[in-house]
Image (cartoon, rainbow, N blue to C red):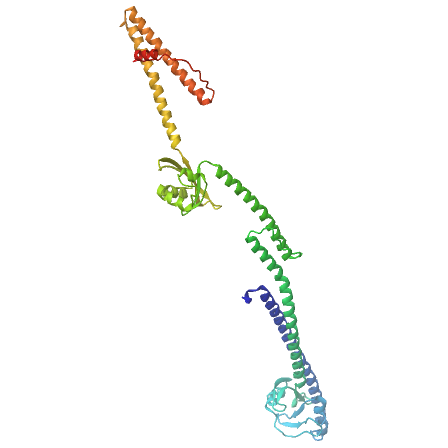
Length: 457
């Protein structure tokens, strides 16, 4: 768990950067210092060897041999801080100095590291070699220069064999100082890394807590971060987000309340389904339309939808993404169910919303309207048929007697008055529907009404 904390990662990264930087700089510095120290020592030894070679060459030309030169050799090791070997033209040692006055020997074999240099020096080359010395039992520098006569011919060689104890000790001290500095730097890096990582992660933790509070619905939370860097900008952006979310959520709740009030006030039944045809919500009017108690819930609605068998229409809505209407018989009622798709922001159907209407009464009224039109048509057709028949009889000459003709005229007059009353009844019905009817009661002679009905039949 601790490995996932950004403070640990930042501190570790800070320490690693300091460690790698100091190691790189230290190694380069030590290497450069070592190279500089060895090159300086080599230069000094080469200058000393060349000076000794010139002295030996002049001494040999003036005396013809190295006899008597041993006294001078006693001080060479002290002056040069190195073993001094002088060889003849065949590489055999002629003189060898000691580490102090009087410590010199003749004709002693050269160590292996010196023999490797002699061959190159006798060939006329100045040679420098770094190796482990069997004389000093440590790393040494061996330089060699040729001894030349007046004609420039190589007559011998001068070798200086010096330990690098001083250089090695200096390098060891430098390494020790580097390690101590590295340890101090790591401690400081760890302290600074912890300080800056906590300074960096503390606002992040505050913002994380604020985000968690917003996830719980507390949109009034504030981070309280007052910084001018990117973290401060992020904190202010999070505060602005919380403020706008609070405003937006309040508006959404208000809109949701308005929508719920609108849905609740609708007399038709409304319910919503997801993609698997599971009920999501419904209004109170649906219970009355479906003939169910007011405790109508999602489970009961799912059972009723299965009984209504609207799966095919539901699949059609999801597939074609267009509204579909279907009429179903339900508990002696006729229900019209209109399904409309619910589309998400990608235009995919996420479910559907359904409007349920009880059209039983409207169907009954429609049937009454059709029956009324049929009855009125029949009532118009009967007197018109009588009038037409009477007119045809009069015009064809079928009725010639005056009394019969008068009877036909009175009959047509009676039917015409009947049509007038029928039209008046229709007008009264229209005024009644418009709420403008007034009822005038009159006495009626039932005998005359029966005589009129008999005559009409």
